[in-house]
Length: 117
Image 1 (cartoon, rainbow, N blue to C red):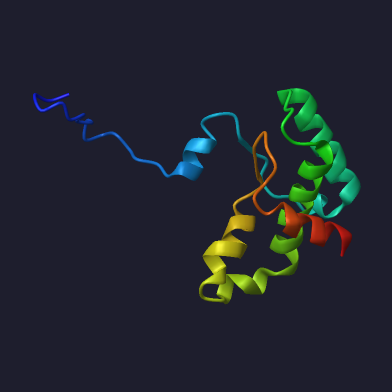
Image 2 (image 1 turned 180 degrees about the horizontal axis):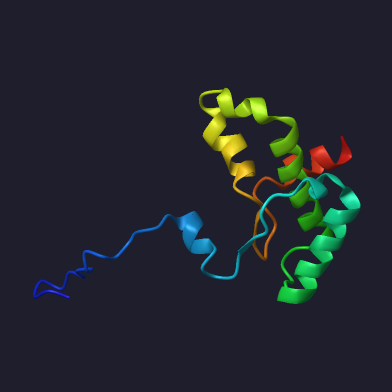
């Protein structure tokens, strides 16, 4: 702190978005795999995550649907990467792997739809 009570960070300090901070506090990224187009694989992966991390704020079924949904968008809607406005919001979000947290995803309704489609 300086004399005015203002916190001064060193020049080497990096800032991060709220989304990035989430993953320093218990979230994981499981990458992307064609195997995630198989609902059985998604179910097993989700059960393993729940068991390994002891998550209680989300169900294995909700995680499985999120995993499947990311893969479905990534492998079936690659053309979205060329649509201005949607490329960053939709496709790039799916393409960066599957970010999971101990909670229900904000896009759970989309994952539910794709799971049942």
